[in-house]
Image 1: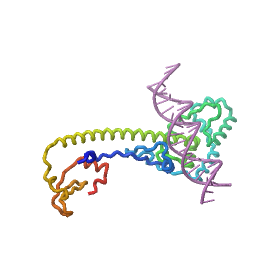
Image 2: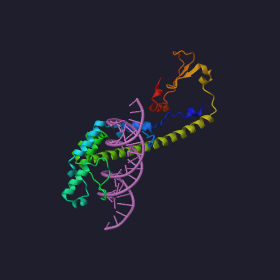
Image 3: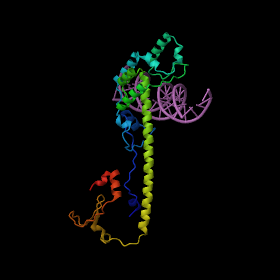
Length: 264
DNA sequence: TTTAGCTTCCGGATTACATCA
DNA sequence: TGTGATGTAATCCGGAAGCTA
């Protein structure tokens, strides 16, 4: 009996990639650059599993750029900024100019020059709506983005940013959960390893004679690796010389993580 | 058919602001 | 009231993909 046999605990520890969006998948397949292997241990559906996103089509892109130009709800959008002290200093014409600027500002992330970055605080209702939408799909096509923006009185860009940040938070959280799970698995395997080492030592130190069946010529004995029944040689499936080992917890363990073990 | 340029989207990292203890 | 911690909106940057001339 080799050490490998002893160590075959049947416990498995797998690391897979998280299911990713179509674009991510393509991207990572081509270039394994950053987050390499994310452990996914089936702790429950992550957002990435729940939400299979589709790549925006070209028509959608055109739609977005035109929609952004058409957006006119920016008065209320501006009002959603909690810090309005700067705005109060402007007259209405300036406001109109800013609305124009905002409506044309898809590409640039730049804030208006010189002014401090203003930070939007979403209202509870806005947050709830965004969350609801995120549950349905973690990425937005341009039409959905525009609709959501109009519904929430936000700029499409803000909705887009919120979804980007939300995806990042989800991924981070999932990574933390996976890490925790892997840690526990590692501890469990270490314990199992210790136990088996101890068992091995005990077996080695035993000076008992081999069981009767072990004194038979090896060619006459076969053991099914799955059901652990020992059958007589001769290739006759109807052999009556079977020996059951009864319940074997390790075997059941192996079934959990290695269903193929149940091939018998 | 190939290719370069452009646009858009996304993820990751980071910054900056708002809030709270 | 000042301050550090925390959450998160916003920004920056680079890569990928699609479209077009």
